[in-house]
View 1: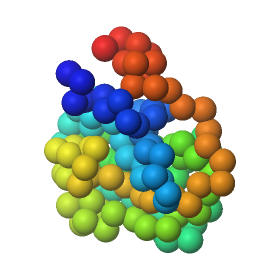
View 2: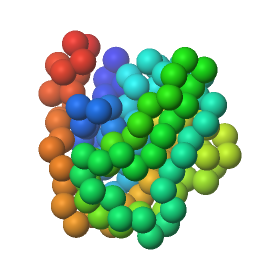
View 3: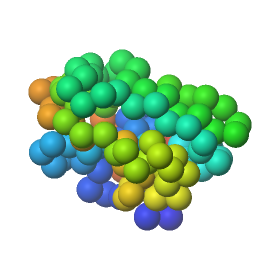
Length: 124
């Protein structure tokens, strides 16, 4: 189960993750990907877009539902994962690897949880 919650990442209550690299990589958690089911569409901001921690920055659609993506940080989008946009199922099959969403030049980090805190928050 530890693979579902990599210790080197920080998590949000809205089921996004972020690493501490520069620029920082943002994605959705395996828990969120599993809850969504078959992911069929992904809408991400353009490179250069300004994100604000806690605000919606995109949308992810599955055969079950449409969910908003919330920014875990404030900063500028410096890269989007075009492969994930073109093949959104990648987000579901490899949420912590090839299924990342955006890379952000961070100016401020919003509230995040450790892997242990995130697991507790979702009852894992």
